[in-house]
Amino acid sequence: MSELTIYPEDKVQPFFSTTDSAEISAQLAAIGVQFECWSATQSIDANSSAEEILTAYAVEIQRLKDEQGYITVDTISLASDNPAKDELRQKFLCEHTHSEDEVRFFVRGEGMFYLHVADKVYQVHCCKDDLISVPANTTHWFDMGPEPDFTAIRLFNNPEGWVASYTGSPIADQFPKFEG
Image (cartoon, rainbow, N blue to C red):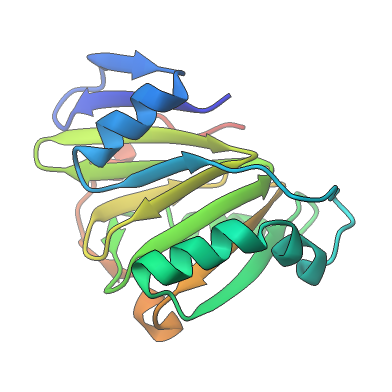
């Protein structure tokens, strides 16, 4: 189940938490982050091809392309038996930014985004059917958990702009990891 938990940046005790999708969307919209729930227009499963997945969500993908100017779209999958899973998890556990939006739609599985905005950390547990769009230059980190198993759709204006620029802040170490 999707969940938003908000912490002050200097304490690990949250002061707000909700599983209500409308409230999650409203709280995140206040900091410029888009959060939506999508539904597939056709049946897909864990064995569906990238083409089948993109077709199942074509209407929503096209809407985002039209509204935000995204140019390319792809899918990414990671399974718990991937030999590079620990390295991939570690890569995104440190606070960083991107020079373009980070747009992810969870086709299946789950992951945790941590958004460090002003003096707060917004911990967003994203699950199947959740879209999150983190604006360019927003400090954040992502945790796929120790046994990642997800498929996501990604949208880009410029895939080269998605390279992480690390802040060097140790803040991510102060917050609970996603244990899936």
